Image (cartoon, rainbow, N blue to C red; front, side, top):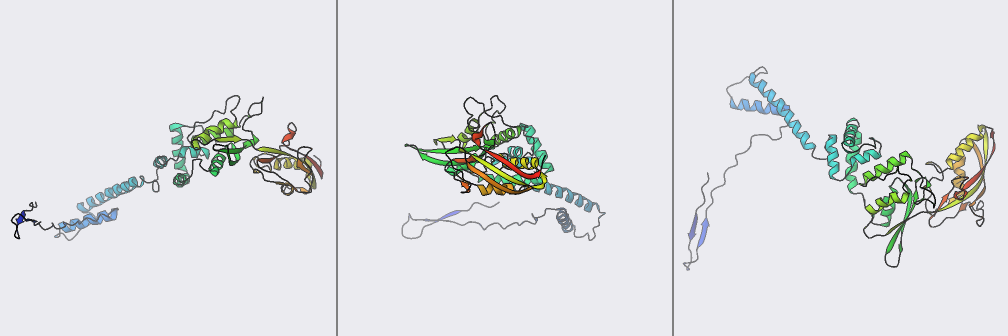
Length: 396
C-alpha cells in the first residue's frame, strides 16, 4: 500500500516567514497489464485461449489429446461461453432500431419516436382494422413474424417520419396535410386580409363529389364500408378519436374534417373551409364504332371513362381548381377505347343559355375556385350531362 507523501518546509532567503512547501510524490505504480484478449467472442477463440492457459500452467505436460478430461471440459466451457456471447450480442442488438430483429422490440422502439406501427398496419390492410389494444398488437407482431420485409419497411419509415412536418404552419402545409385525409380528393389554400388579421381559406373537393354540408332539407350521403374503414384508421393513426360514421343521419364532411384541422392548425389561426365552385358542362358526342363491336358495350365503356368514379375522367380531384378543360383531352380518352374509330364533339359548353358553345375554341376557360363537373345524372342536370350518339357497330 502506498505511503502518504510527506511535506517539507524550506525557508530560503532573508525573510524568516517566507517558506516554500515541498512534496515529493512516490513513483507511479507499474501497469499490471492484462493477458486476456477481450476480443474473444466465439467457440474457437475461447477453446484456444483456455488450452493455452493449460499449457502455460502445466509446462511439464507435452501431450494433450481430445480424449483428455481437461480438453473435454475446455470444449464444454467454450461451447457455453460461445452461446452466452451470442446471447449477449443479441440482447445488445435489440437496444437499437437498426439492429433489432424481434417484432415486439421493433414496435416498442418505433413507439419511442412516436411512430404508431399498429395504425399504419391497419391503413395498409396488413391487419384487421377492427382490432384494438393488445389484440391489434399481437396481430401486428404475428404479421411481422411471417412478413419480415414489412417490419424492415417500418424500421425505415419510423425515423423518416420524425422529419415529416405534421403541423399546419404555411399555406402549403394546410393544403398538403388536409389532402392526406381519406375524405379529401383535392384542396386549394390561400390567405385573405380580413382587416385585422390574415384568414386562411381552404377549398375542398371531397371524395365522391360530396359537399362539405348537405343541401338544405337533405341529409348527408352515407359512407361506404371501405371509406369508413380508411377514415377510422387515419384518425387513429394521427392520434384522434375515430368519428362515428354509423349514425343516422351520417356526419357531414365538415364535421369529420374539423377536428383533424383543429388538432394540427396553428393556435389563433382562423381557418375557413368552403366548397369549390362546380361548373357543370354540356356535351353532345357522336362516336363511330367498329363493325365487330356491340353498341351497348361501347356505351357502357364511355359511361365508365367519362364518369366520376375512381378512374373516370371527371373523378373528384382529377381536375384542379381553375384549370381549363380542353376538348382534345375528352376526345383522346374516348379514342383510346377499343372499338371506337372516330369521335366528333358537336357541343361543348357550360350549362346555361348565357354561355356560348366552345367547340371551335376547343376549351372551356375556368378561373379561381371553379372545377369542371359532369355527373350525367338525369335527376340533377345542373351538375353536367352529355348526349351520346353512336354510329355503326352491332346492335345489342
